Length: 261
Image (tube, rainbow, N blue to C red):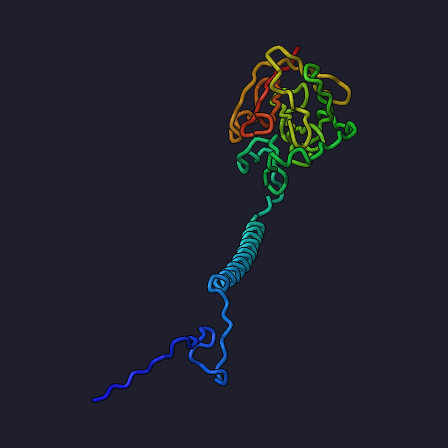
């Protein structure tokens, strides 16, 4: 049996790799391909961009939901708050309040952050009010350089303008507890150096130009909820109250003085 073998004559050129086994008239054409790494990098960048946009949208939705929640909670708290009944006197304050005056909280009861306190300007002192008989109108403490008007009441509004005389407490020179409160930092520093007072120092309270001198007997650091310093007294004493320590305001400093005869 005769076998047939295909042979290539010596010197004949080998098929070109570029043309392969296809002739020049073939209907197929070579595909232009891109490197696989380049395609993968473009896909990865696109996915990262989409993920970033998704995170931004989720954060915006979460912030909106939190704002709605806090607004509803605040609205409910305001709606549920009951005003004080008509005829409520200052003597019932200890039954309805649990914090001493002289703190730095604003009417919204939101504490001012420490890093923002430098932006708050102290309120200028108001002219001396015309005091009614038996009411304090001016406080002078020579040791600390205090010469401030005394307003009736110790709410945030009064304490922003000067020293507040607690309604329902004794008047200057009277038997009882004359309670005066003031700020020491963000809304004025009328009692900034109250901690410098020591036993024997003098404090003068004026009523219609008549001075009443008190001698410091005691200095205390108490919790804001310690209301014992507001209790009436059988002696003519005067109690100064302010927040303490400076720019921390976690406690109250209380200075008790007795009328000098």
